Image 1: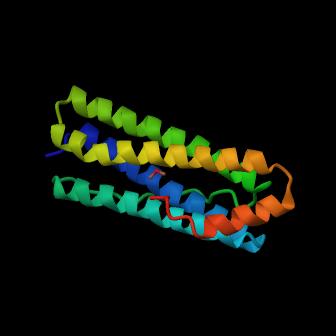
Image 2: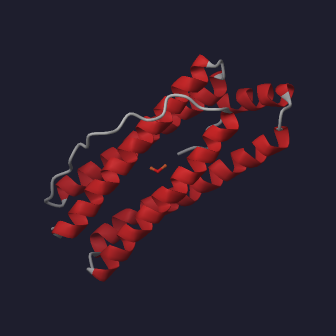
Image 3: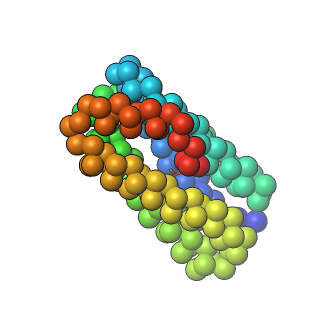
Length: 165
Ligand code: FEO
């Protein structure tokens, strides 16, 4: 059985994962409109994955005797400066998500809720991967700079990129 506080924090995480999904969906749509097919495909996939992260939490809360709540969300930004800005925003966002997951983990340890602690380990590993993926992509973008040919290849590469979870 979940404590009231852990349930509340898990539901806050549901909201953050849902917001992440919407955020990446807005980025995907912008990239598609701008003709970056590879980047948009990558971001649509990323958005779907965030929804999966949210669902996983909802199921867990319900299976532990709580109630997973569907949050109201603010509309995300629809316009972006460029691809570089998008991946900088993603990295910043994922670092924030990691911080929130860590807070949840700390709370579980304080309350000796080892079941939720165990469940959250999947998110801990996932965050390491997501942050490192965003950093790798940003490194590539920094190398490319303003090179249009490089950006063309980058977009094509991202289309077949399957490393994102
Ligand atoms: Fe579900 Fe990207 O954190």
